[in-house]
Length: 229
Image (spheres, rainbow, N blue to C red):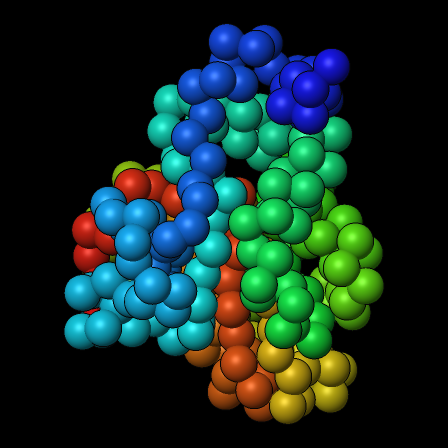
């Protein structure tokens, strides 16, 4: 059986469903991970939006496009107790973010607020980040970054609404400050939409002394519709 066939079976996907997933291959924008139309784009190139208004995180990579094919898989992972998918997603990130992992000092998940964690029973970003860190031989920092304020769901909000929603929501613990100071942190999440959540996390990490923050996600929406303010 081919590697793709084994991966499809592990994820509970039929070969037809697997074939519909759009995996992102280089070249991509170094800043937000969006794919370029031309395969001749040089490594390290940034899209116009990232040049004009870069994110607080330095670089981003995504394993696949967030569309109907990947959405069903990710929603099952987040809301239907399919935590077994974390291993598959971690392998995807190991390939998509290989260059970021090679330079990272530690891996940290985007945190959930305790009230949401109690309802969901697990943090989907942490379930992915843990095996990513283990496979790369990097420090895993599950509690360095916290979500100190409960926020509304980002789902139906505009880009500016998402940024307002998470503004000031994240903080670094005292123990976390010692863990991240002077280090390059790879932040892990499931989906990149406008980048508001990852940006708020990156700002908190940088303010607490991180040398740099990169981002790796399972899936990203096509393009970059709104640049951060």
